[in-house]
Image 1 (cartoon, one colour):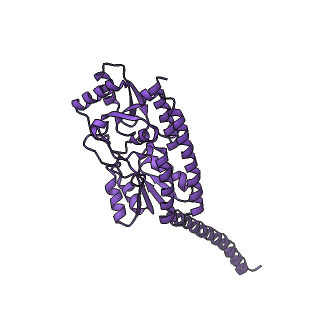
Image 2 (cartoon, one colour):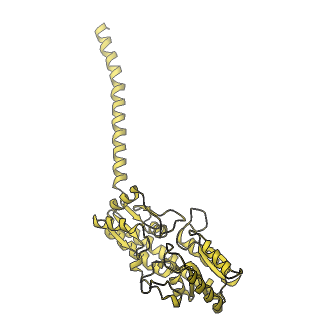
Image 3 (cartoon, helix red, strand yellow):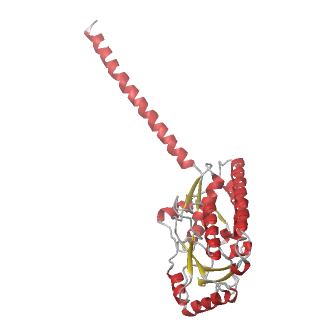
Length: 325
């Protein structure tokens, strides 16, 4: 073999691995670009509160990405958004929020997303909202006639909202499979119907004379309406935790509790229980403070990390608190 032929073969042997490596790198780059494009093309749904976020994830399944803005154990009346979260709202295919004034620090961002062309759905406004009663009837003073945003304490209203969220997803979120969304929504609606039956059976254990509720703030109007309870009053005489009671508010509440023979106060776990403890002091002791998860889900594994588990945990705590179990 000539020296020239040997050099030609040597160069060819060196070039082949280089071409192979270059080809592999191009393939990896193309695959990465495809993966990024696929991820970016995934439909996106943003939900404000973690309760509605859990329900929406049950409906959507794997058909779209669902981002929940409110962290576990947060207060929906006071949580805020980062700049990144605010941007996510305006890039979503659909925003699901409670409305009726609940997310007090977030609603302006929802309004901005709607103004930029994002589809939005106010679940509370579609849930046949109740209105707050007058203070004399145990409702928040100064909010008479205003809609109560806490509709989720009635599982039947949540069942209605489940179907409406499914409608919104199918209408506004491209590339989802409508049949899958409907199947998921119907399955979850059946679980909610079972929850209503279980709660009714559980609350039937509470005697009529003990079916009176006092809470940290007014949150259980829908539950009381659905299951036959009377709301005596709240330590914070408002539908929001951002208000604070006066000494006359506390005096009126203690008098109402004494008259009704109520010695149990239900306080949300996401809110400071100091005010409920103040009420205990006002009444000279003997007041039981029972912790509930009424406005926020807990972290995973903490007992109320889904809407269904939260409602069952609260029902059990309320029955035990009202029957002295």
